[in-house]
Image (cartoon, rainbow, N blue to C red; front, side, top):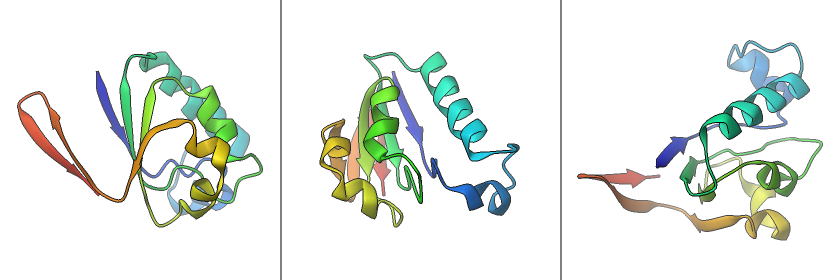
Length: 112
């Protein structure tokens, strides 16, 4: 299975208020996102993260990535600078691209 997700902003406290996310704390948001991800995604699935994986977080991007199932692919977003500086995080990705064209069933998908 192929999944697409963007703008997780794991660890970003202000995103709760700015995006109106229904969480009291950043820990609650992060744990809920990771639990729901792992309920759906298997290790055989591909997950395309279309930018802004983790931002202003207390934990490293690698810490989050090691807890999430699936083959993860990062399409670089404007808030992924720290993730790109984290060698342990980069090792968790099957690919890291600025833009990527893939085939999903009978569709061509451009991710950017």
